[in-house]
Length: 123
Image 1: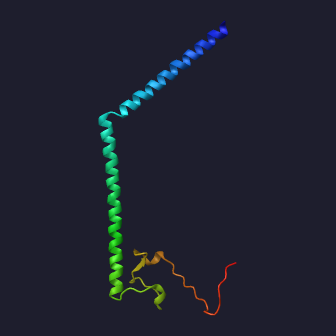
Image 2: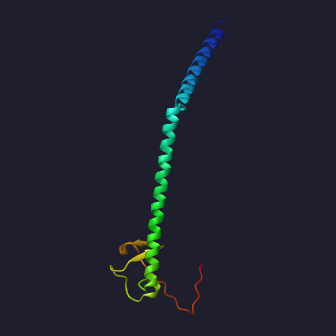
Image 3: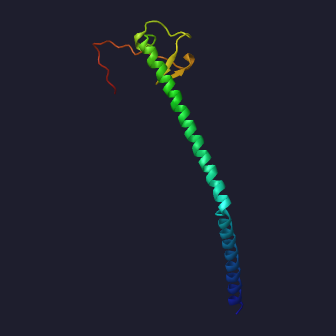
């Protein structure tokens, strides 16, 4: 008889605890779905998207200006490929990698010199 009573009390306690926990969870969810909170959350998400679009637009504009400067330099004869120059790169030179200007100290340029008569094989 005592065994049944212990199991009954344990089950009742588990049921009450589960009901209270579920009730708290439902109340929290209902309050998060209140119109004011939904509007505030939506406003924050919209602001984040707008900020992201603004960043993307600025990146696009920067890339456009860099590409335009590169094309103008090529048209005016001020731009050459590194493989076409015979002198070392100086600090006065503007270096562009994929259309983006970079600092001269941040790039190491290695030239691969091979004889035209030899073939290169990888093992």
